[in-house]
Length: 278
Image (cartoon, rainbow, N blue to C red; front, side, top):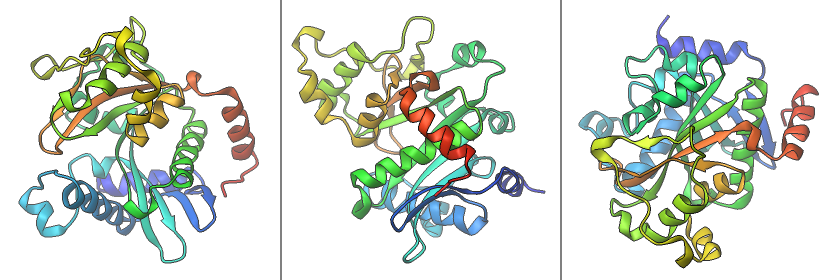
């Protein structure tokens, strides 16, 4: 059995692939190679056609975004049941999947997460990546469904922390000086849990003094996904990373599940226990 088949098999044996739903939209895990490829095509459309990522010749020929991590990850999808289109996706990598990869978690290519993994040894960890939503579905309800489905997943699997890279468009950090400085001063991870951008790629986020930052303005300027993370209790690592392939400025997002509002957890645990995935 290939790593891809093994990952899909594990998804199928962990209960219903459906996590939540809203109207015609259904959030679920991919259970077939065709569903994974649909997520990869959506990623290609957004990252390479809409944005400024640079595809490999193989990706361009296939019209899909793919790499060596895809076969060992799970893929969270939002599907519009009216036409079956995949309109949003997340790539999910658990600690057991990272153990299969020669390079571990994808995030380790941008940030030094060794101390974090050591401190969290034995706990269930989830890396978030390759998140994107089709342009005509970038609305509050879609983002809320994506977030709810993610929380249902982590509750089902007793995940302790989530982490990953979140992006600002473009490769000039100064274009996001307000937002980066705001994250640095107001939402940085506490001492002992701070993850730092890799030494040779470290870019300081401390561009504007704390007392000169308009918090409300900075929050409004954040990309929707990062804003959602911050409002839900996520913390930020130290320093940014310039991803030239994807044309982005990346920050480290760190989210202990203890930071999630207890009301959300109680509601979703009841829903999960009752088998109400829709």
